[in-house]
Length: 477
Ligand code: ADP
Image 1 (cartoon, helix red, strand yellow):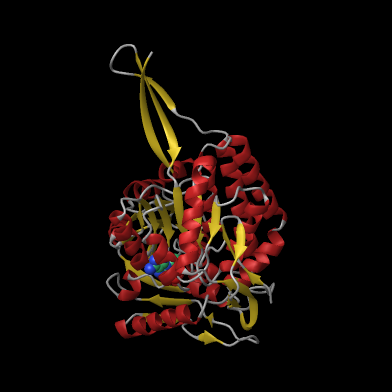
Image 2 (cartoon, rainbow, N blue to C red):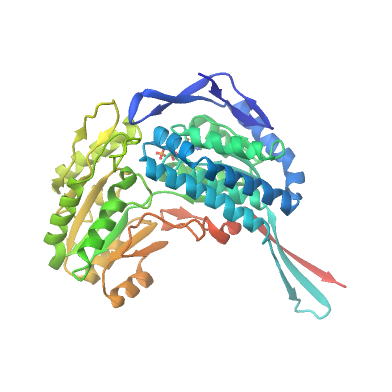
């Protein structure tokens, strides 16, 4: 098997590879991927630093052309890359192709943004003096990504970093290096100068930590667990560096008595269980008012019975496997915790056997849960949902906000009054009305509050806030 190498200073390097294993079938090895050493990472950072002066002054047409070409190639190869994504991460093929399409849209969006870079010109408070406000690139950006969106998250960090004139050292998650390698290969062939984008694959403890400890990285954008996010924050403060964190969620979805039952069930099933519940925007807390509670539980458990769990590439599959054995253990441990805490296991909870060795788990619903149980407070990151019964909207709103997290929140209602009130009073960064809490657009801001996020929003034109630094220049003519 050929080794997919790291890209450092424009050269593919690395001779030993680690196996990328398919979670739908652990006998299927997706490929071998090089593991960077601490020394490789230092070389990548030095290369990115050396490439920065020229790239930061490169013409907007050059940047536009490279990003556009990348978008076009990703889109043209969506079937192949979607298959790779589903093989390495375990999302179903339609989900994999959808995510690849989104990555292409993100590169296309930021190709366009290169042509829209703008500043402001203002009169000074002092007559005869002009003030110009411009945005400049930060320098070397460290990008650290998780395994649950193997192509979309790398795309939404790499595309704006390059668009605004930064150079990059990129470390993908160990479990899913395949899509990351593919987009770096595409960008490299699209004509990026040497050292502008460096790929360093390997474990967080070596590759990620070396990035955190480097004084030459001007900004780190991170998506992953709260624990690692805190390390990124502490190291970044130490080095006086800008940082942006996207971490966990425990996203609520409220279902009110007046909800359209079909809409509410579909939104809950989609955001609780699709993509195996492995989305930071998944709704893992359903908060349901008394009048609709029993009807909703019956309809949701009926819907859950129809969800086919299986090999991600099979056409009949609705939900693929859990990403690996470690995550599966975390999910099943939480299922045991839920039972011990006294929640009622209304559906699922069992590991499933299929004709390939993989990490298959039934979608799982706990009813009669409380908001104080660990299954309702801690992020499980699997297809496991707690359902909590409440008296009315006021109690539902208070409970939705009673969480350490604040990424996404939803409400199912036909009442304009409650929908409007919830949009204004939810303490989440993203609010959904009659929609799943997961599933967001590529051209508008993404991010949360409280323990979910830190720093400026990602995506859309709001991405400029993190990837640039503002300069105010005064001129007396
Ligand atoms: P998860 O539990 O979802 O894998 P992590 O926060 O461990 O979440 O991983 C997210 C990303 O952070 C991965 O790319 C991982 O390799 C990286 N990472 C893990 N530990 C460190 C660390 N000490 N320093 C920097 N990056 C790390």
